[in-house]
Image (cartoon, rainbow, N blue to C red; front, top):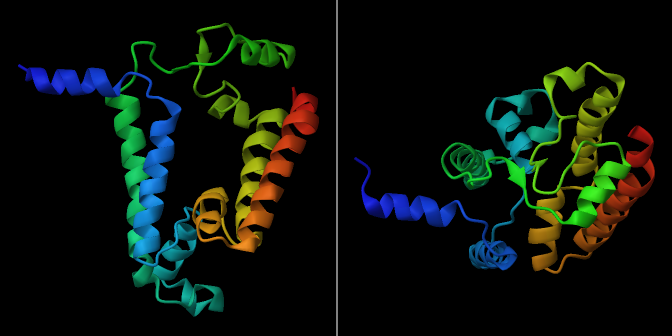
Length: 197
């Protein structure tokens, strides 16, 4: 029999939380990282893993003290583990349904995406193995993934590294990168995405 306090915790966690809780948690993490002189970024973990596996023998890019960045790998593992826990044990009674406005549903329907108020899935149907073997799926999943990866390296970091860590440290290159991220997102949303759908 499951203790009542565990049921209460699950009920509390499975309810949608206010948006500002995430903001407070991000701010708390950033204060801790700044205090210890660390910088946060998810895309850097690929470089760390490659360096740990000996890629420094093939490229100078991977020759650095990767062990000093091991804590960043723990952040990535924590994100994956937390996502697994949330998706398997803390889903809301609605399951994998996104809580979006009627205006968002109308915009999705204009693009030809099956959507009804209260029935919008968290992961759209064009992110699937079946979609991967279509032209549209290939463009969105493979080309989009490549561009995100290339862009993160070209910009010297990902959105979390620049928008959260870099801006917190008042770095001008991060501000420029974040402006680029937003302009690219607006370009994709308003010009490219409607063409694909």
